[in-house]
Image (tube, rainbow, N blue to C red):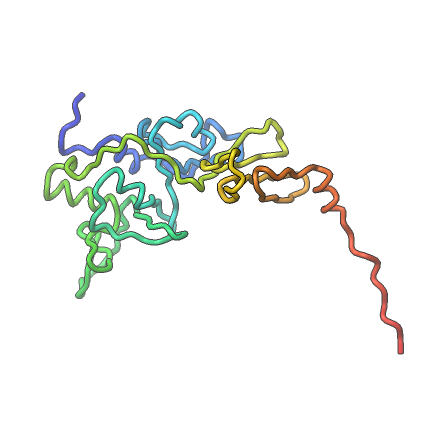
Length: 233
């Protein structure tokens, strides 16, 4: 079936209808199984454990800001024209809200407001979310495709942690997408998190460093010396 010009592309529709930040039914027995990624090629929400089977697909990480779902502006601009959408800064990255955030207002004063949901905005923005801009374009231009961009590859941010199955129920390892085991200077890109359930100890270090069970046992069993009372005068 050929998609008409006034329709939304399938990946855009999936951002609205997919349920994010819910447990993944495929990996419900794993840790970190929260579905916070949207596969734009499969039009489905996936968890970090699902990334291995979607590595050749366009992946968009979904984040949360003030209890609403957002995406990085840098990623969204690769997919469509994001001009006039107000962006917000979290963790040194600009993000854009996906869905509308209606704001009830009986009377409009002087100021700048969203074209779709009347939310107060900063100058010169006229859309508070991606959904508001899409509705505005479809209403006034009747065609969304001139605002879309050709994007063949879209990968997760380099600091995104991918779970690695170690085969040990007491240990879960997380590696970054930008990890490079051949580089000794990439101290921030070669990062791993090792979690021990029994000891409750969190260790963060370079991939080249090895932490043995003996070292952790020694650090956990270390005790202070016997306290001595001060002499009486």
